[in-house]
Length: 390
Image (cartoon, rainbow, N blue to C red; front, side):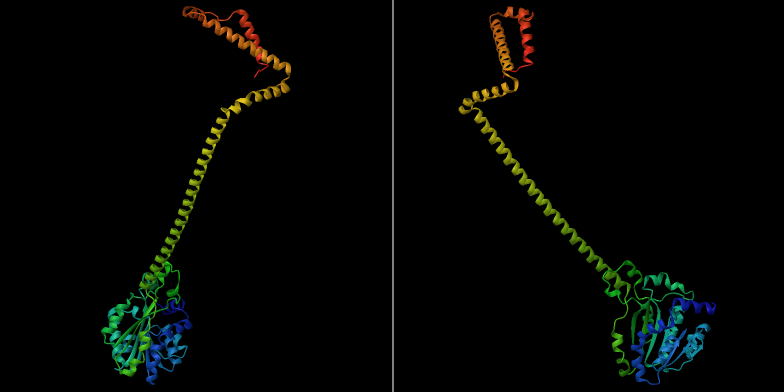
């Protein structure tokens, strides 16, 4: 791979020099206490790249040197006045004497190596470290699903991601006294985010992780790092998934409570409406009862002696009003017409009652009225259309 290509790739995707130095400060609690007990402490940075870690070590007075096989990267480090050499990482370790280096570091190197080379690197680091010395290995974190499935493969020189438990076991197997796994570069607000999204679960876990291991040493050297070794770092996909599940369960419970509240409110409103219907039905029944009572009272009035006494008076008053409306002459004609109708009806009934059954049958086959009578009735009917005697 062209060196300038990889240098450009790193500048774009790894981050600025200032940003990388800021990120690397997380390791200072594991380094400064050890360096304070050893004024001649030395650091060997494998795959030093642009030299950000070497620059940070120099700021704290720690003698640091770096090796890398990328000449373009080394030129960037040399431009900062840093002590770097073009050399393979494993060859550089093999050339170191036993118990001679205080810190061996490798930031984003092991993912570029075969696993057998990673094992050899760890074994050589354990050999060259002084008692109480510290090994730091940083690499992309495959626990982050986006890193494992996509971002890891952005770098064409990556071989394959290394799970944190595998790298941690490899270091422990090499004989280190204690090992610490720390997650790196995650959003600091994730643990306290009130409404996690699915994207937070998939891409929110620490994008990088590091294995920090300390070689067996005297008690005073090891106890100085107790505090940083006991501290918690980073966030895992499992933790985010549990938090997301808890929040979703809580949100679902709140929705259920709201639904139950609305259901209870609707039930109360339905009960109120039912009570109103029952009340209206009772009022309707009361009204029907009152109507029946009034009808009974009216009927009682019609059949009472007082009503029969006043009915002729009411009839006379009615006739008086009709005389005023129609005139006296019209009312007299109406009465005469009614009298003739009554007389004709009476004669017809008398004739019918005097006939036997045979005569009645014969009469039924003939007109029952004489021409004079028919004419009279017709003429009277004509008057009936103009005057009503009632």
